[in-house]
Length: 141
Image (tube, rainbow, N blue to C red; front, side, top):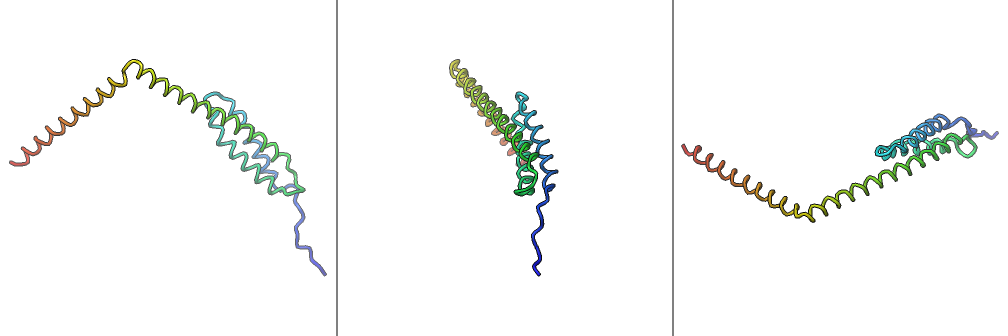
């Protein structure tokens, strides 16, 4: 007698993770459309992709993968939009920093700032020397 050691495929396997992946993917996709905050949708989008991928793996070749595929698609869309917002934010910050530096150089403010910092540093050094002299003279008594 031969015994069948393989277990039949469970069509319900991974269904709960598929639903969770779909919900997190929808949240990530919706949240990614919010300007200035949409870049933070990367986090739930990655979680949604992971949940959906695990659900698809658990469902196997004959399982129900509809929710997992939906979760994967919505999570990827949310991830792409969030990555776009992140790119725009980094690009804008770089442009602002470059613009500020250019404006400071144009008006000579960069030189005056460096001179001011140098004078402040010299003043701090003088104060430290005076403090050392005071402590040396009081310590000799």
